[in-house]
Image 1 (cartoon, rainbow, N blue to C red):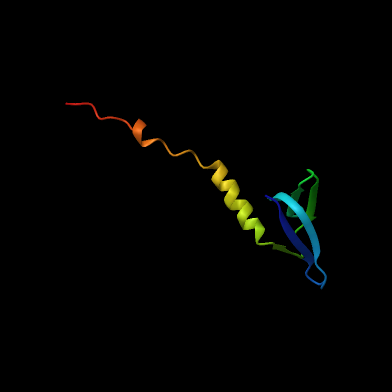
Image 2 (spheres, rainbow, N blue to C red):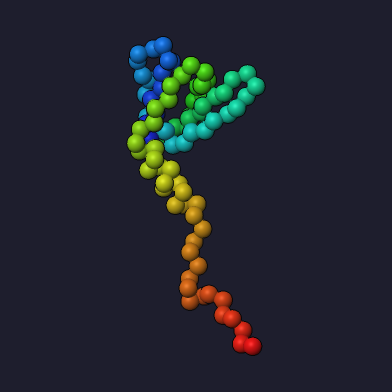
Length: 87
C-alpha cells in the first residue's frame, strides 16, 4: 500500500508532494539527519531534516498497520496445543 508525503522548508509557504511512497526511514548522521523515501518504482529520495516540515497522508497509517499484520507471527492452532502428561 502506497501513501503520500508532503514536505516544505519552514520558511516556505509551498508544500512539495511525493506520491506513491512505498516506505520511508530516518538516517542519523554526524553532519545532518536525513529522512528518506522509497517510491513505488524503487527510487530513493533523501531530504535533510534540518528546517524541513514533513506531513504524511492518512494512508500512511493504513500502510503501517498492513505491514504490521504481515509481520505478525501466525496464531497457533488450538488443536495442536501441548497436552500435559499424566502423573
